[in-house]
Picture: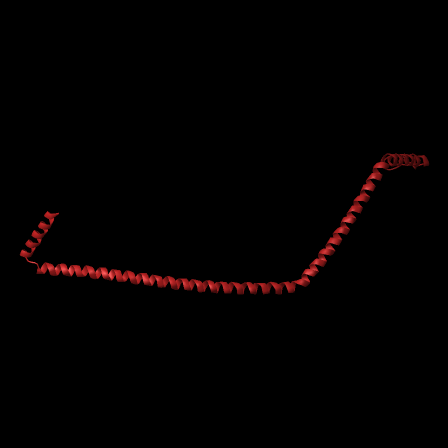
Length: 168
């Protein structure tokens, strides 16, 4: 007796044959039923693998072309740097010339404007001086006439004024 209380049984040929036949029949049935889908699956898988390999080959070619272009660009870099440096220096020199010419023109315009303003200021000062002198002369003449005029002169001026007014 065994530990569980049952007699220990040794397998016979039939005990192994029946599962083997079942397995063979099951496998044959699977092969028969799945042959088309399996064939299609493996055909598709092979096509996908082929496409992947082709894409990988193309990517490798593109990467090689890119590497060659990068190496070419890297070799070209010092010459390009010198070219850009020369262009920048040339542009800076042109800008310098333009700025200097603009500064000269601005200075000339400022000088011309200053001269015009000075002439105008001088003319205005002369006018103001003449007006001031004329006003002072009138004030002085008025003062002198007021001092020199007497009552009889005033009466005569009034009479002459009235005579002139009547004739009008």
